[in-house]
Image (tube, rainbow, N blue to C red; front, side):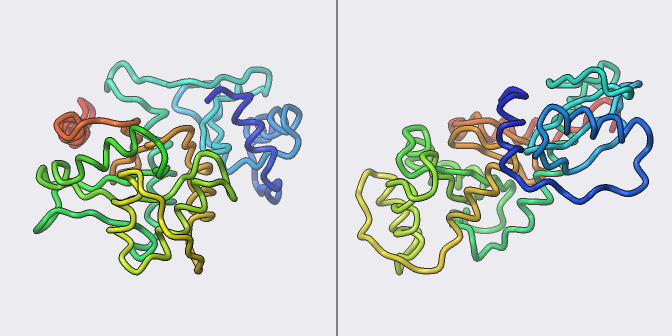
Length: 247
C-alpha cells in the first residue's frame, strides 16, 4: 500500500487530540503530515532508528519524516548489522497489541489436538479463492501444530454479499461447521445477531490489511498471504529463530 493510499485511509479517521511534549522534530513531522492529509490521525511519532528522521505510525503503516519535516519516505528500513527489518518489527508491536485485544470468543478457532506449537491470525473473506484453498487444508495446518484463528475481512466492505455471509456464519448455531461449509462454496442461511464482523473489518484496516488472506504470527509479524502447510510451518520456524543481534 503506497503513501497516497495510507493518507486516503487515514483521512477517513477523526484527527486525534494534540500530543503533549512533542520535540521540535516530532512537531515538524506532525505538521508535515497534517499539511499533506489534514484529517489524518497520527497514532504515534517516535525517533526513528535512522538518524535524522522520525517514524510515524499512521493508518496501520509506518512512514519516515525528516526532522525538519521536509522529506517523507515509506518503505522497509533494514539494519544491515543485525540483518533485521526494523519497519516490520515496529509494525508488529502495534499489530500484536491490537490483535491481542480481540478475545477468543470473537474468533473462529481451528486448533490442533493438544497444545499448539504456533498460532496464526488470519483475516479472511468467505468468497476469496486463496482463503478457501487455505481452509481446505485446515487439518494439515493443525497436524503441524498450527492453530488458525480467523477474523472476518469481507473485501467488498460492509453491507456486501460477503459481509452478509460472514454475519450469517457467525450467527449459526455451529459456527465452525457453517464456516467450513461457506468456505466450500455453500451459501449460509440468512441469519442476524450481534456479531463482530464490522469491528473485525475495521481492525483489519487499522493493521494494514490490503488483501486476503492476511496472515499474522503471534508476535504481530505479517506472514503475507496464502502459504501451504509446509511453507507456513517453515516460515513460523524461521520467525522463531533469533536474529544476529539477539544471539
